Amino acid sequence: MQIRIVAGSNAALYKQIADQISRSIAAGELQVGQMLPSVRQLARELVINPNTVAKAYADLVQAGIVETQAAKGFFVSKRRQVYTKTERLRRLDESIQSLINQSLTLGFSADEVLDRVRELFGKVLRSLPDS
Image (cartoon, rainbow, N blue to C red):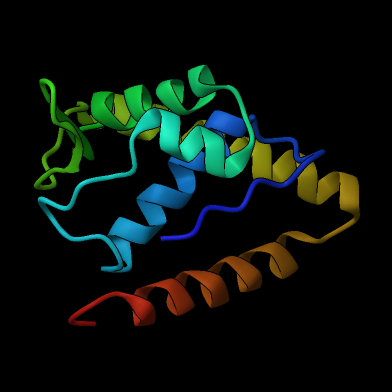
């Protein structure tokens, strides 16, 4: 797993880390039970504050994507639903609203955005194991 931080991105550093780890898990690059780098190790590699990595890991634990084992570290967990349908929809709506706002700012039409979403969604689905 390789994490890349994009300086100047609208996304906070911890969010970039959490999103990339989530994608690596979804793509099968990280398997259930696999250990993640320690907070300090990843912070050193990315040359960032360890608190930033700790926040990313905490978000992944809260989402049920990663679990912590005392004195051992962080591990990819079995996928389980920790949020209610209402909360999942709220989170999805928040992301979609951000996409709409940015798309309008960049001058894209609704059709262009929907076509691009379908294209990228399909690309991600094709990259998943057993797809």
